[in-house]
Image 1 (cartoon, one colour):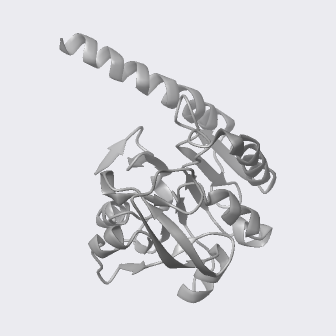
Image 2: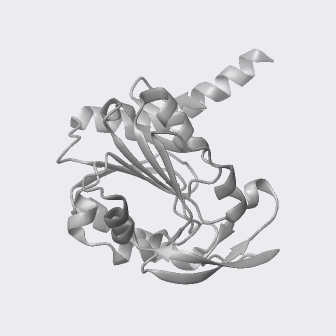
Length: 234
């Protein structure tokens, strides 16, 4: 399901994206696709081509493919190989390569770096990169070249330092690097960095006024409007 923050901003599974640049010709790489809801929603709305990448075997099996949705059973990290993936039963059988969790089961699955994945699927420029890989985003970003990151038109990331506070400085460093590479960062979650959108100024150049609107009014104003709406609905 797509939720609108504004006419241009869509929220899909707690990830905010800049919708005007996503059309039927767009390439979307969905890292941490879960059961495919994000890919299915954005493909249904725009007709774009989605590459859904998921590590959990249970979730991977649920992803529905089509002519425009392809799926890959990988865990994304810094290198190719294999790794133990800790699964936590419950909501959507979430799992992780790195976060401290009480696993209910552990499976060995193939791993890919971002660049290796892009080579495999034959994609250069990516219109939207969605990253929700349960803590492995730091290693993945650190292993990815500046050139590859600059080829992303926009990136939406769920950082996981709220689960593992020891990674806070790593997240700070990752955000600064993307800023230095020419991305405008917009933080939509109020208490952590679960929903951060990076817009590549080479492809998506917003005015200072529009950036300020998204960074402040949309982030705080929409929350206030929801609170007022609940109050007046009582």
